[in-house]
Length: 234
Ligand code: BV8
Image (cartoon, rainbow, N blue to C red; front, side, top):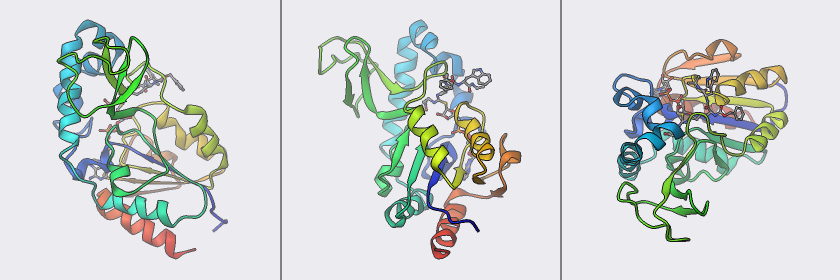
């Protein structure tokens, strides 16, 4: 196996499913309870800010009651023990990677732990509610929204992500359906650069055919198994 120094890991809602956080597209998932257009787009927010703020208040509160699972813990071990480059690009807005001890984490779709002021553009760590329209700690305006990337909005730090993929020797995708771009396209970028690609997911995803290897199973079993296997090969 060619020398692997630099790794990019992409995670999605499936890595947090066993922590009790709803995924988006499984039975009874988040989007089934709400139409995406109504709660995860700027248009939906403009149309009915109360609905959107309540949707995110509910998720922000729920996330704070959950704990990392063995998949998050295994990636944190990889982060702590791997002396090459590693970037965990997560589509998730929960902070379970960080709470498991991972440090090299990039939230490309934002985080539930910040409020973003649409008046002064300031971002503030936030664990409370927003539907009651609290004032921005920075400017006092009652114009706070969740610091998450909605459909039609630019994901965060795309240049940093593409730079990490260009340097990578291995791209691993964990717990994502491959339904949302640009994240769903990363495996093709990796393939076109001759990078090795591995998928760990409960079931085959929309992108499974692009991976050199695709393993099906629960993240809490597959991720620790892969991390131990990978670290023992050094
Ligand atoms: C953008 C917000 C321009 C925060 C989210 C037509 C074609 C191509 C693209 C488009 C198009 N029309 C519009 C677009 C663009 C659009 C898009 O992709 N639409 C889709 C629907 C076609 N994308 C955008 O608008 C993005 N912005 O494109 O800007 C641009 C382009 C390029 C470069 C720069 C700028 C912005 C998208 C962000 C939307 N925000 N979240 C929040 O509320 O959380 S999306 C949301 O769904 C998540 O953040 C996540 O990213 C996404 C996908 O969800 P998954 O994480 O994959 O979860 P899902 O439930 O789908 O799947 C879970 C998987 O886990 C399943 O496969 C399941 O089997 C597995 N699983 C379950 N349990 C387990 C498990 N696996 C292991 N173990 C288990 N126990």
